[in-house]
Image (tube, rainbow, N blue to C red; front, side, top):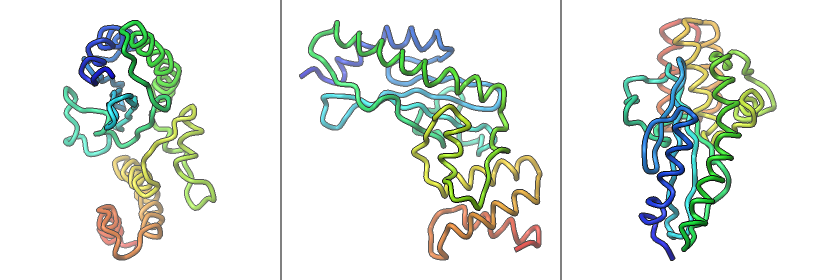
Length: 208
C-alpha cells in the first residue's frame, strides 16, 4: 500500500492548485483563507492505519481569543468550528487514481465551502439569530444557518462561543443570559474553563 508521504506528493499539486483558486493559501496538507470576520482552514489528516485520509474544514471567528491564532500558521485543528468533508478518502497504488481523489476532494470542498464563505461574508453576525433555552441543539441551529455545516464542537463550547460574541459586542444583557444558560449546562465540578468565565462575568455585572 502506498505511504501517506507518497500520497501527499501525488495529490499536493492538483489539490493546492484547486484550493488556491478558491482563495486559499498554503501547501501540502494545510491551507488557509479568511474574510473580514472569520478564518478558514482546510486540512488533510492521514489515518493511523495508513490506507486513507480525512479532510476537515475549520472555521474560527476572529472575535475568539485572536492572540491564539497566528494568521500565517493556524491549522484546521486550531479552529473552534470543524467539520469533515466527505467520510474518508482512500489511498490508491496508482497516481492517476490519487489525482482523481484529489479532484473529488476539491469538488466536494467547493460545494461545501463556497456557500458558507459567502454566507459568513454577507452575514458575519449570524450568531445573533441563535436562540437559547430551546429543545433544539445549538449545533443544529448553526447548521441551518450555515448551509448544513455541522460542527464536531461540543454544545458547551458552542455556548461559550455565543457568550464571547455578545461580550465582545458589549451587549451585557445577552451575555448575561448566555452565561446563565451556560452554567446550567455545566455541573459544579466540570473542568471546562468557561464555567469560571461565566461566574466572573455575572459577578462583575451583579446579575448572578
